[in-house]
Image 1 (cartoon, rainbow, N blue to C red):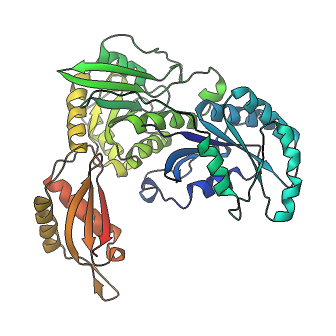
Image 2 (image 1 turned 45 degrees about the vertical axis):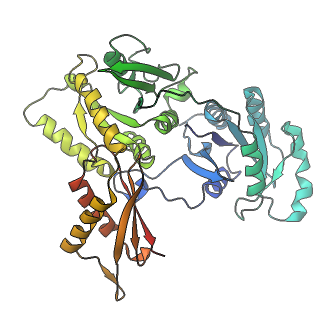
Image 3 (image 1 turned 90 degrees about the horizontal axis):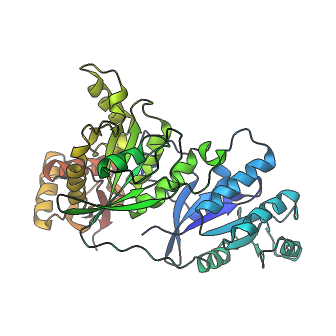
Length: 436
């Protein structure tokens, strides 16, 4: 189920990114610790009072050379398009400004729930000065201090209470949900049409022409599927076409609803930073992943072209070393027939359970081949392991001291598990816990 989304909106220098960091906490991305993924992000996940949600920091949306107020307006419009609840940040030290009023007018027309937060209220004496912000028309202003963390809890209480009720579409058990993600104009919609054998999705050479997110049920060889198209752009305008980060926001909701994600790359353009960033979210979400290189028919090829492209993908997508790669053409339907069997295999691997007895044999053999490391005279001792979850397969290893489980040794154990069991296409999680 897709998590609700909070967008943080406001003019520059009101502390949007500080509030964003406060809300998401010190959450360290799995992907960001791995080479090959750029670190700047405008989007992250968080939780408050058991309610999980996603957060957008519009301060990270770069509109380019647009004038000051136009940038603010366009960033706010993107947030409105994506958010379920909007946190409107203003600066308590500066009072109401013309730019604040510009943002307020845009948000007021949106009909979305808006929570007004007055930032930089660092001491109780300043609270008496926030009442001018009632004039913005969003009810009670919440005094907060991003730098000191004051008032964030009350703000989040109000924000999550404003989430709308959503009904998630239910599909029959065993239905495989998969999405196609990628930059604009990599051919996602064309691939869906080619796989369905009919024109279901608007296709154009202009990047970003898909108008609505589409769930398309499909049956192939008696297996039920739901294809989720990620583009879903409901507004036309250069703000969306010029802002590649917008495509990430669209992809994220589809990723959360998918079992398997097809990361689509444009063979003509090669691998871009945006491709790695979008793929990184799929990995981080723990979804099954297939890398699909589309428009393969457009390249002039020799006997080394495929091997070179494959090597480039493995070097650029280090964190997706488990993902199968398929070279296709939506236009000529080259190799598209292979996609559904690969999706089935990845889904089955993503849902696989391993018997504890067999798992522990693998772990014991691995430790015998490569003994656990020592740190400050203390050696890591592994007692036993068990699988605790699927989608993705998640294993808990009980040890004497989790701090002795070095990343490199954890990676070694993961590789040994992969050597024995077929986990192609799915990440696996290995968690160290102290035996009690």
